[in-house]
Image (cartoon, rainbow, N blue to C red; front, side, top):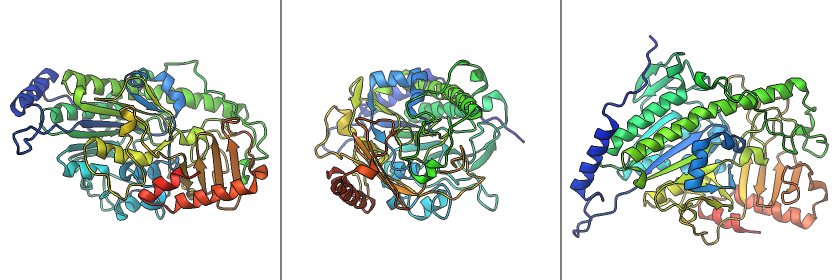
Length: 499
């Protein structure tokens, strides 16, 4: 039987707020006593909204995110270590590069949920560390590619370690007709407007905040939407908004000459009218999809403010990877080393964060787990390849920060069941490793092909200069790339600073 489980808050917001105030009055509002008569400072709450395939060109259509930018700090050069869902999420949870998580694709044998679990990803997750430190934790929406609410025998899976509450789907991409594992109980959702997944997650997220806010415990809430991933299904109320929007046409759009590009890209012909129309339709529906995400952010922040929790809560918004639509003749997808795919929006708001801040330093998804642990005043493990972003949030540039990012990608085998396959046209990125700085991109493909771009002069990756780059520069960049692809922990930071 299809059941709608859209949450109605069990208590009014005002009652929950009163409970929080009373709890704060009883405890001094500061948490447990340290033993010397001085109350310990209460640890902050963290709300992490992670979207799927959301690119920078969608932010102008998200007023709540723009409000977050005005009130918080935006990371302008936040780069993914691999522009692919499962690899990115494994890195986000652990702070480790893909070559250390061992999650290289979306499905076995080189990736997916089971590979993440088998290689200790759940034990290394920031969620487990926070829960062990007394946090109440909740995971909502998309977890890892290959995760299913039931196991192979039809039994509902147990909640993974690190999570107090669990409301997670397997295939939620259509936004309707999905099943959630709700704390070990399978619940099926149908096709009514109120079953739209992003709205259901918003309901459950605000409900968790109301309950957790009055518990006296700090909390971590991750809401991972499937939006705006394909098949690009907006909420019914947004199905006809922005009727005249078209996809942006950067200089790389339907690139005129790809003869200097690697062989996998040279196979692509210029996009004709059919594909150009599809690109515009896709972008329009992506814009429509993020309206529900933006509304969810507004609801979450409003609930925090009503409950008086906004002064103690960090809200983080970002995406697991970018997305191209028409750049370099690629009709739609990700996985390339180009800016459209690897550079994503990340915005932080919360106590002590300067309003309207912009950070231009090279930051990565390796830095998220260390940041969450640091915000919770926990030790960052030596296994983390990234570093905490907290100094940036306070307006201070950390000493010896990296100058370059590592991007590493293993070409996944084609699978008709994989919704994250590059399905725009024949030909997808070959296996590669790449270095990215503020002013250049250097790519080595497994077959020996190279790319090198001067991003100061050529931000759209139009002119591949690999054939004319000086031999000494090539040797130096290749050596730096080798160091980063073999680094772990502290050595990653030192390798990323070399020039």
